[in-house]
Image 1: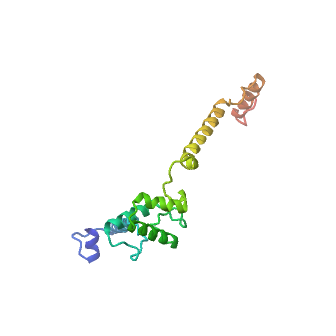
Image 2 (image 1 turned 90 degrees about the vertical axis):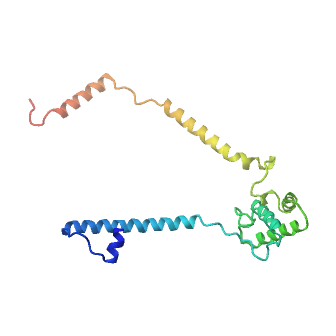
Image 3 (image 1 turned 180 degrees about the horizontal axis):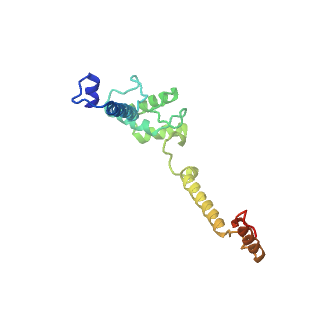
Length: 195
């Protein structure tokens, strides 16, 4: 409120000393800066939370909303072979467009969702699925992260065992202890008081 009044040029109720006025001005500036930062953060949050735009073109869409919803569900499960990590529903690539049209053609022909997916997989292989099935050929894909984690834990354990097995430097011999005591004594003695 104070910032709003100061921006409108409203007179202050009491007369303050110049040092206090500068403190008030600094406080107002700090508040304005904080407001600007908060506005920028709010804008960034809104941009981050914006819905993902789908690449489905209006000419591809089916007239029947139920079939279109099924086509969208299937499109979310299929990978764009050009973009690699996007579904065909999110990709603008021409191949993704062709796959979306093919999915809609199969649905209008009367295929079930599983039949459409099986047809696409028969043409392009399991790679076209965003979530490939767990099979003998894909065991490394599914088990790879766990295997890497186990290897990492084994390496850390081995390193820790090696570090715990290391001992410090060997203890000083009697001769070394005597020489060390003599050096410390010599250093502690003031330079002008030799007898």
